[in-house]
Image (tube, rainbow, N blue to C red):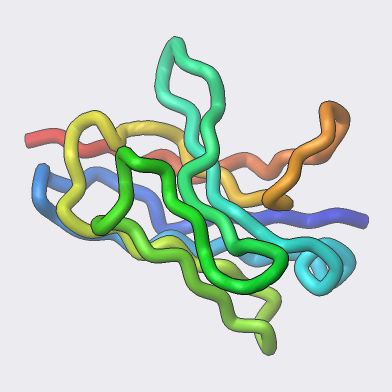
Length: 116
């Protein structure tokens, strides 16, 4: 059974930081490279950051230099450290496989709101 539980979101002022966590079931974490996605109101879900299967990481241009993806293999957990947050970062954040299929399961996500 696939399980993805995101947490760590909240309300933060512009320029602030948040650290998101995603606890994944072993059958997805140990098999697939993982990534973080977000969906803002009225917009499609987009990839924010991911691990590359051959090593290294990828970041969307909008978050490059501000966000950092990391993982704890012992805890089957993926993190997203978000610094210098902007109002346009407001979205529901999800973790999942780095390559998504149409019928893939999604967790409930965690809401990030950047506002003064």
